[in-house]
Amino acid sequence: MLAERNIQIGRAVAVLKELSEDERTRLLEESYQKARWDEELRIETASSEGRMEGRVEGLAEGARKVAIKMLRTNMPIQTIVLMTELPIEEIEGLRTSLATQE
Image 1 (cartoon, rainbow, N blue to C red):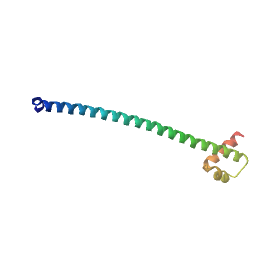
Image 2 (image 1 turned 180 degrees about the horizontal axis):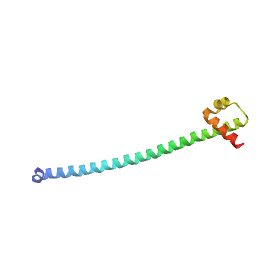
Image 3 (image 1 turned 90 degrees about the vertical axis):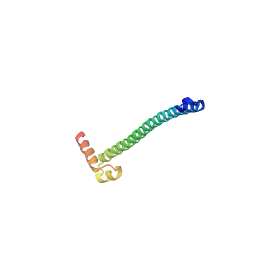
Image 4 (image 1 turned 120 degrees about the horizontal axis):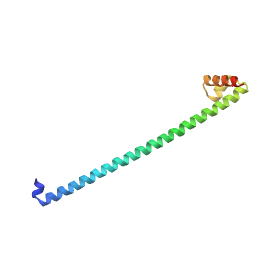
């Protein structure tokens, strides 16, 4: 090979190999860093989604409690639907549950 016959070419080949190894190391580090960022993003996204689901469920639970109070005061179902934004089927289910409890 030419690098074996010429010292300068041999040195240049050695430097190129070293740079190539550094490039591989850099690419491996970038890959590792990207994987860490992806995992952090997945965790952050899951956490945000969990908080959002909790808020939605909390609001729905609050609306159900208000609907129950309104049913106990004999308010019309259409008014309860309008005020709580719960589906009429859910309010009717709550009314049935209240009737069986009383």
